[in-house]
Length: 371
Image (cartoon, rainbow, N blue to C red; front, side):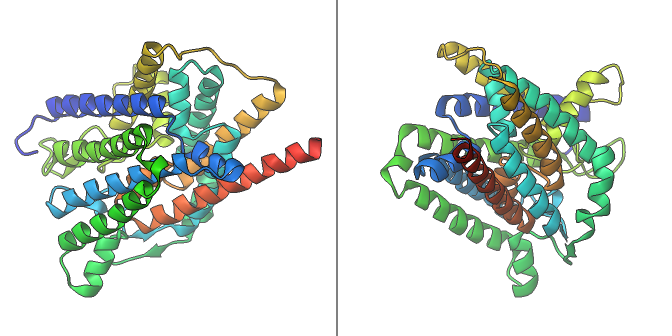
């Protein structure tokens, strides 16, 4: 946004991101939007209803993002997902760890925040452990292991790794045109599949699919268009205000949880600023809590026993390590990342789903063994 005061712009961006994330929390609480739950429904009952929610949200976010690319508002290469480095092994390993962990922890990062808003105390414990393990994987002991192992295996392209950029370099067709065509074709196919059965057209599914997808696209607009400075007056360089990565961002709930804990613990440090990620974490909890209180579904819930506690602690740790390694979670990669048509995001999402299925089969095996 030209001629904008960075401080005033940051305030506008933060309030906008907070409002959109609160709306996410309301929708997720109202519709039981949950990727882990969707996979569990399929594995345990053969029910694809909630998966249609998630897939519809993918399609809506994909169409919204790529429409903005076609309009010249956004560029996937200016996000963490669309850069030239294709870290396929990190996405594969991290995604599998995250997927396995979210089953043990009874939900992914976003579901954990939604449950906290509904009064779930064990989700609060999961949040703390997830945040600590995520921060360690960003900057601590597991970060050293990550950088020295899986992150060393990568393919570097001459262009961005998003499909429109890759195809534009090989065909000579304008990237904006390819973004419009691919976004509409792939996103439309996802929405079409979601609506192909009656359960996909239920009120909850439509609210979750259309609403969550629109929120993801909306945060992309807030960060990448509204919060974009072609030339920051302080640095004379391009900037995306109020972001942790320095690039445009949409919703994600692993690294932002770590940044939220960091901001709370070092609040008096003037270098610690509010970011889109931090206010989004708070916004989801607030939105979920408002709906839970209004619908009288708010209730306190704790751990059942030591085994339940152990599962959630291990799961939270795996989510924190895996989510950072894979550059995102079921929302960060599954919706925000996939909306950019990034190759890394496709690998990460496949690995998350595979890890979740393995964890569900492992749980079923343990139950059978105990009988």
